[in-house]
Amino acid sequence: QVQLVESGGGLVQPGGSLRLSCAASGNTFSISTMGWYRQAPGKQRELVATIDSGGRINYADSVKGRLTISRDNAANTLYLQMNSLKPEDTAVYYCNAIRYRFGVGYSDWGQGTQVTVSS
Image 1 (spheres, one colour):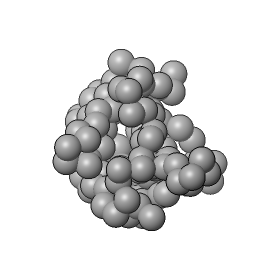
Image 2 (tube, rainbow, N blue to C red):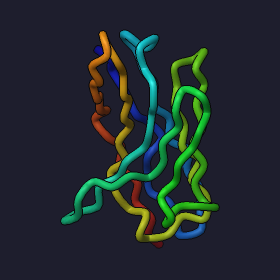
Image 3 (cartoon, one colour):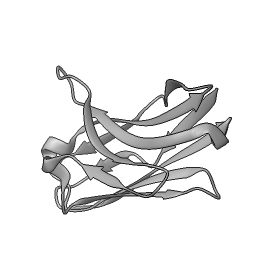
Image 4 (cartoon, rainbow, N blue to C red):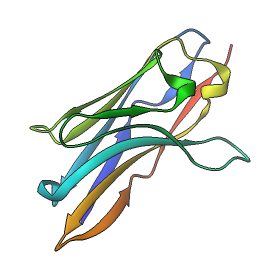
């Protein structure tokens, strides 16, 4: 099993920046793809960005050019640098890790961190 703990959320004005972190522990050697997802009030959880073990990155169109995902495998930490934030970025942000054990895939989630973009 993998435990994920997010940090770095908070209140920021439009146009501001935040950096989210996700610390992974447990069976981290089995992690393949990691990613950030978000869920706004009354909406479904949606993909923000993912990065696989080879460094390939995928972004949602709504965040391209403003949010940057990165991964420090030695530190077992995932990051999300968030710039030029907009009110519509307000959501709970969740860290996700996909791991494989004997060919079976498992998905682990963090508890989430609140990001509020408001003046």
